[in-house]
Image (cartoon, rainbow over all chains, first blue to last red; front, side, top):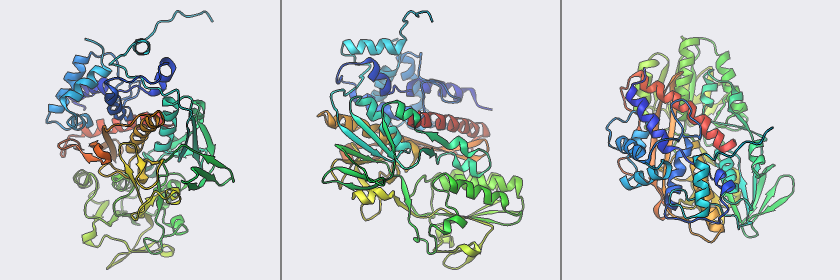
Length: 111
Length: 427
């Protein structure tokens, strides 16, 4: 029996940890290259797509639909939780609050 | 078919916005100006991912992937095949999608690299020039590092540490085992591909024995006293396989120095042990082409700058995946895939006159302990100054003494991870 709180945390985490593939960028972005302040966040986000696909898979939902605020709250609670039961609990601890905030802004909907 | 009105989704909208303005939210990077020639050798999780990402970042560059086999057989999850829980066909992936993405996939074997002229020789006799070369050669076996364990011996005592025929041989031997005959698994010294892999395999073989050959037992003879996820595996073995799995570390005469394939006997310092099935997971080193390219050091592995994954020994040659010296990042499919993405971005930047920056990397490895339960280890790493280091107080293993639900959830996540990472590499 999977505890509800775990399932909830995973669903929330998935939204944050999903990643865009550069494959999609090439189709829609004619600029060469676009350089912005969030360059490093795109590099940091490369880790995410090892687990999170564009579509949801059992136990690892897709990135979509959550606000940046909710994403940050989710990542932040993973980081601060003493429960290490999922990989996200242990991964989130490796990122500064600022990195989590920028990841949330990077992936989330504007709130 | 009637024309559909265009309703852009969120991602399209964001991309369109970023195309016209500077968007801090979506730094869509494409380096269309470069027509660089990039050659990737090795089509595993590292090489296949690297080729795909390079083409996406540099749509006008020539990206060539050299791979010996037209079908890839994945190692992750192959322990489930050995345990009788999965068909080997589920491990196989073609390169059709990679070809369709614009990568020039060449089924040939790279035999040599000339770093001076920047050319790769192929066994077909042709050669390829490169501006940047990315090696993702995986591992090769150190034959005879264990006395008597050569390629011929591996037909009798399979290593099954490269998935494919060896996986099938080991599985068939287990099926043919008489109830009451033992199985020996020898585990190698570090570093080696997939640190928790031998112990996941031991768990799944023990599960098979428990159900199908209840009078048989698996004995792990280990060249080490410590191994990945050790407390979790020991806990799982005590719970699930008290009568079917025994581990002997190096301090307990676990190190195998010699094998006698004809009698399926292994020799430690003080003992000779025979078994019905002997799975030798031998010492390893970087794949052969890495040596030919001159990117290996005295350890047999490849020192790299961990920002760009460029070799520290040969300019314009990058190395990713199991062949690298990337500790504390482990030799895992997740690491190879992520290193490929980081390296592809770095190469695109280098070919476009930019300098790659340090970043944060992560790794996740799941291991099955039973048919439907798994455990995990994760790490988060920085690569400042080209040196990988673990981020303090992050990462670690699944909790000990967790209830079955947590283990079952990780097994479900492991299966989803496999789907995702193979899709990212092979499409």
